[in-house]
Length: 308
Image (cartoon, rainbow, N blue to C red; front, side):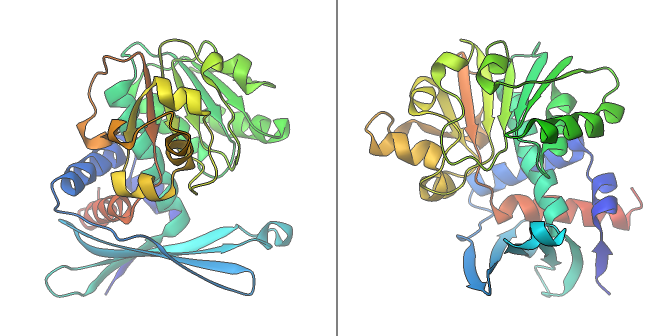
């Protein structure tokens, strides 16, 4: 029968280096036309949104099904719930079901890890993270897996959220000097890597807030009208997209400066092609894709089968 992999098992089966390698393979497969994922489908009922994200690739077929229930915070339940299904490409049989939110957090962080590994300076030691939600801890682990991070500065819209995150990640990263910032702009001024994973609608950082040399992972905002970075950051940076089609459809971080005439779509580079950048400021914009979910899910199933 099909194997079930829960959130805890997923975290064990997909440590950052394994997840980063899986999304790297998926980036290459999509670039080569060997993997594809159509736009996600949304349908709503009773205040709950259902999202379905199908994908096909070298690993088979998959579909991630998530629900977003706005009222769940008051109920003390997670806002996002769901599951990933992985199916055999020859026979179409169901191979496994995996926890959807955990898989999403792991693959999203792995994209940031992959981009940071390709684009941040090798000696990067100061990581600034904006946002203290469900994805933040994985984001921290992924960057720490690829760079010698010694200082971690956390910022959140509510300071209490950042303080809770600091307590949660400290045991996993005993060597890190962890600080909580009241002002993101001040914290970012001496960052080597900045990861934004927030629900912000308006820019959190402008070009004046960043050092001349820095790598930014913009992982939050994924609608055409919301963004985490001001237009001047995007205009000044070497910009990489996790998927070109997805970012041109959904990423306000890029679509808004394009509409303003401050940035041209021809300047967006494919993350698959990222390497040491001649430009000191680099930005990776992610809106995600089922291709990455499928690659990570299939790798988790393989590792579960072999007892890894």
